[in-house]
Image (cartoon, rainbow, N blue to C red; front, top):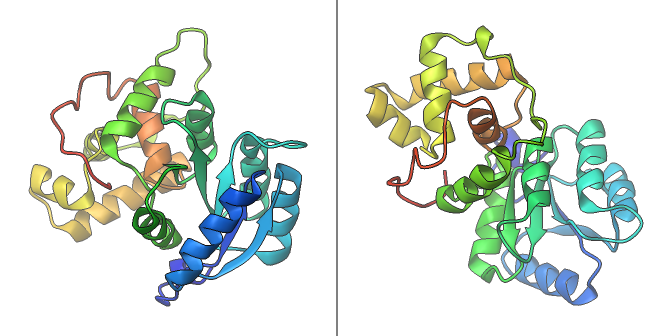
Length: 235
């Protein structure tokens, strides 16, 4: 990785979408803002091959593509390149495939009508190793699909490994709080909060905050309506 290793360099990006116009537009937007686009892919199979060959920091991944969909492509890429970050592209936020992609390790999602400024900011954010979570949208997504009675949990987590404090931190993560908000809520330093978060990720085998939110809902730590008053914004 380049951006996530602390070098401060812009992330290298692969764009995977079956629509040429989308790929071209995103390439122009990112290139104009100093972000290198190292390749493009028109379907999931091409995305997997290109990711293995080019080793991008971030993949912008459409879900509905021919030959191999973006969901399976996400799994295959992260299985081989766990340091890669994947941003899911979708036309609407309440998409069950987006939820499954987050569970599989995607670091966030973007609507295809995203503004140029938001697109570049999102790519830079996940390129640092963070997750892109707008709490209000992510909350609605997770509340809708985590609660389905006939669906097995997408993320299997044994919470018995966590200390009471770590359970408290995971609960607040699930409610969409940032590290700054966590520190204020728990009366801790941000450094201590980061340590708790890192230990939670290590114990549960989570990639980032996106999977932590999924776990918090699927294990019942957070339930629908628990965080309706929380402020929206990136986590």
